[in-house]
Length: 358
Figure 1 (cartoon, one colour):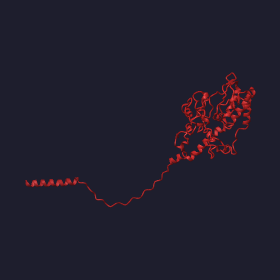
Figure 2: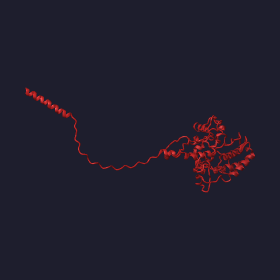
Figure 3: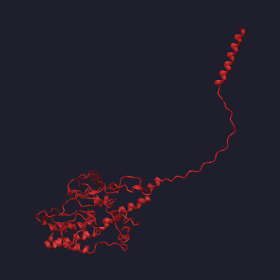
Figure 4: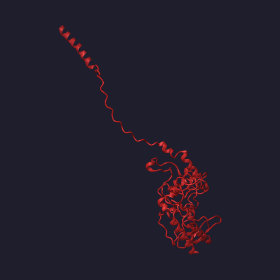
């Protein structure tokens, strides 16, 4: 019996040793380090990124801005002349729409809401922020420079809302104002053969440059000269407002933001006119003087109380059409350069019409 108890005790002691060994952590013995592996092949260098700050500084620097500011200061836009009509004229009266183009607030209201208010208490003159606001894209390489212009949209003409003018580039910003004002309808025969001139400021106002370039909104009185197709002028097809009037220049008095053209040196001109572009179409001054004298004789266009004013009254429609064309060509200010063929037809046919109707 004693032997049995001793054997049982020894078995318990032996089991405790086995349990201890099973639950203890195993610590392997480290062998010698292996040889280093072969280095991998170097990767290809990535393409260097564009310095975004440098892209901005290219335009947003004093060096870039100084010629812009200087040329703007010598321009009519920067002279303050365009600002003098702003404070009291706006609204939906077609004879009173000055604020929409003659000051910053009126212009912004016009492009954003469709019309300027009827006067502004503290109007601001035209400035950089009138035409420029913020970029619509910063991917200039793929999207092109937008110059932070406020509008690129095609323009529905105020004198003819059925016609939308689209020059397809930054020139659309110019069309917004450089179009005829809707103060007076273009003379047309309503069956009476007569037309009533209602004020001393008859005509398309100061902005028919874009419509002359397009070849529209003159009074196409019949005559010996045929009228060219719409938008067929070479300057309309192959150039634009900004290409001709805002060419790069070392002289702040031409190109840039002066909008003045040097016909002999401007790159946009000499590309097609290597010896210098003409300053008017052939015979323009002579024909304009002839037409004005005929209209003076009738009394529809006079120089009192100021140059090239109209005399209110009822006139044969062809005389009124000739007066409209005279004022259109005068206000265009290009002496026919914008659209030579259309200018010639308006001039020649107007002279013929007045001579016949006298």
